[in-house]
Amino acid sequence: MQHALLKIEAAGYQASDLACVGITNQRESIVTWDKLTGEPLHPAILWSDARTSSTVHELVEKANGDANVLVPLTGLPLNTYFTAVKLRWLLDHVPAVAQARDQGRLLFGTMDSWIIYNLTGGAGKGIVATDVTNASRTMLMNIHTLQWSQEAISFFGFEGIDLPKLQSSSHSFGSICTQDGYDGVPITGCLGDQQAAMVGQKCFNPGDAKSTFGTGCFMLFNTGDRPVMDAQGLLSTVAYQFGDDKAYALEGSVAVAGSSLNWLRDNLRVVRDAQQVNELASQVEDCGGAYFVTAFAGLFAPYWREDARGTICGLTQFTRLEHLCRATLEAVCYQTKAILDVMNNVSGQPLRILKVDGGMSNSDLCMQIQADVLGIEVDRPLMRESTALGAAIAAGLGAGIWSSVHDLQKVNQQGRTIFEAKISQDKRDQMYQGWQKAVQSAYGWSLPTPVAATC
Ligand SMILES: Nc1ncnc2c1ncn2[C@@H]1O[C@H](COP(=O)(O)OP(=O)(O)O)[C@@H](O)[C@H]1O
Ligand SMILES: O=P(O)(O)OC[C@H](O)CO
Image (cartoon, rainbow, N blue to C red; front, top):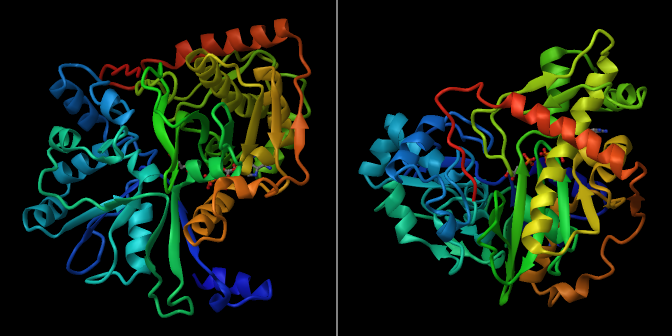
């Protein structure tokens, strides 16, 4: 908060100039806390944390082996990724959480709920709320009615636990009450980060799609005012709800994107930073036959293989670090292609332009490879903080600064870069066939035997 205040002041404004605030956050990650003290009961469990694998297996068993049992209701398959699975794990493994539940003191939520609670006063005062985009990632919301689902709640055994109040993405969540200069500023917007990026990229029409290349990579495709339920390995999710205006999306989630570059830097210690990965990768024309399946904690969409693990294959005597760096960039591009192939199939309308943002989209090389691998245009804005822009838009709509998304046509149009595919279809097919073989090699490394969930 203080850091933000310094930036506001450096730009010539004061906190009192703020009309409203929008929240955006990593989705699925969970915090549990004590209603009486406002203190966390356990460190947050992040979306990508796979410690809940055994819980998934138990839940799948309970569903007679059907990992897709809640897909028609929630749009999501049983997987370590989603919030409800993490809460089940916490109740089963952390005595403080189980005890708080028994004593009626347990509060839980995704990161937005935790932030809103603390910004609005914390213990005894803070508002416990979430918006429908974040709730659509918990596995506890009925995706059709946008209400908490009693059926899902009883499936997970969460009867009697207080759930955050469900609101639309533009709503008066409460006013900031932190006594550090922002007091009284209303919080009028809240969206999960990937949905916020979708709003920031103005994907307001059915058929619009964006991919955010951050720690993970998430492609969301606007499907209009109804969820697509036969998603063939993709997730059905809420894109946004602004008053009566709501949209759904198909989502393809890639668990590891920019984090694979961090892995080269921090674990292998072979590069200084992400930029050096690009510099090395651009020194070779291709990967020399090498592939890197970055399945550090299984593979998400459209594969949903928890048993997959990171695999580097196709190495020869001549493979160099430069090839490995390029293979690392290519990995996210191939996973994006696997997702887009399914999206095109499900939607019946092949995508022609993919809007991109996120830290990894800073790499011209990676975006060129992406255009080459997909065979369509990749469109990158100059201002790439689409997630923050989307949160600001949600807040502005909530505060009446704009009356509808139609008022936003001119926002962030300047300086877009278009990457066009430059390789032949034969070359594209040959590269992708190699990737598909590499994916097969990544399966079966993590025991117990996999739960292959396809929704
Ligand atoms: N120039 C670059 N080229 C490739 N990847 C980059 C570059 N700069 C940052 N990244 C990657 O982007 C990721 C961070 O992106 P960001 O959108 O900030 O992620 P998040 O919102 O998930 O924290 C890092 O994992 C980093 O490896
Ligand atoms: O910002 P990222 O890449 O960690 O993405 C977090 C997503 O919300 C996870 O679903």
